Length: 494
Image (cartoon, rainbow, N blue to C red; front, side):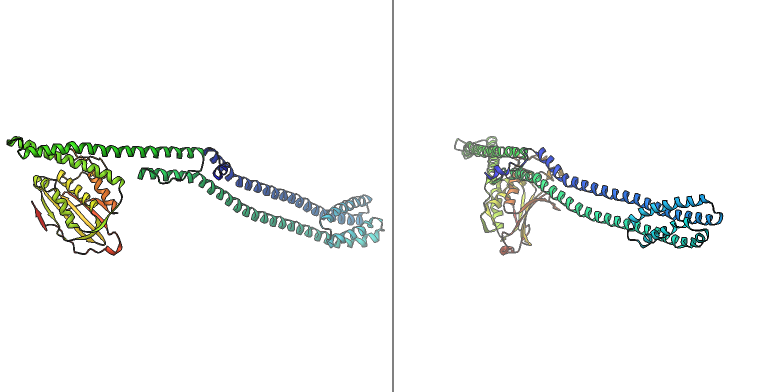
């Protein structure tokens, strides 16, 4: 019920989720752009209004100063030439000055110079009505009138400067507010981006882990259902089907290997038993040519049995991952493996050089013996007739190192990268009647990995092919071998 409810708000497709993520991430940025536009519009309006007022007030202050000069000039001219037209001009300038001063009072309501000018205008308005002598004596009133007019102009400039300072402070306040809004909204966009990225990437990573699990182990243990867009949920369902199908195919393959191995081993045992009876002379004496044919049949039967055993080993390693660690003498395990290949080595005419024991180590007998068996079998199959097989071992730095080297044709560079792949056939032809299965080295590498070790193709100064097995100690209490290692030439088997 919870899952069904939680999925109601989820987009039904990946495209819807991407579009929703784009819109949600862009929404804070759009709000930021809108608020920035509003703030810039407000600042622009204030700046334009202030500029207009400053121009108008500055022009009015200059006009008042010019009118004051014209009034003084007209009054002094009248005192000299006594023309009535000059008084009319004087009255017009006085009225204009009074009108502009009234507007200037709105800008400077509490300015003392404006108050003083109002009183002086009343006194100057009395001049046209005075006798000429009194008129001339009152001309000195224009000196303080000019001083107060100039002081009023400076006061106007200061008021304009104060208004510009207020606009500048307002701009700084708006700038700081925009910075905080930018930080907050961009952070919100980043958080939304991370949230939607997680919503998109999380199911993709779940699918990736699922695919890696299927590819590495053939199945994904207890997969969690993918919660996300419909396309990814559908892909997860397809992976479920693929995993089930792979499990079915793997089971069919293992069943086929078991049945085929059993079906092959039964007639093969009869063939080898019959060839052994003929070789013992049960059916009568054999000629040399007939005995040679029987030996060929018996050798081919042995190689075929070895191939079947390799298939069984490969099948077992793919499903049985249990280890039985015990203290063993590595030299004893190696000699037991060499004893199984005594006839093959003797027929090849290869001289064997094996280290002396005891070399005690904790390992799995079955896996180690199977690994060494495949390496020795590989040396018999591909080694040089009449060549050398050398097995070296040493314990160093908490690891057991075993090297199996043989003379013969070196492994080509192009084969080395895929040397341990199952069923891979290299360019070097196997010496013998049967072609190899291509899983011997793969089984050997799996046996090494099963014990947390590694098997690599190493370089050797004398011999063409050298495989190096490195096995770590199972625990810290057994990192030191109980005996010192011995290397090569300790035994020489024909």
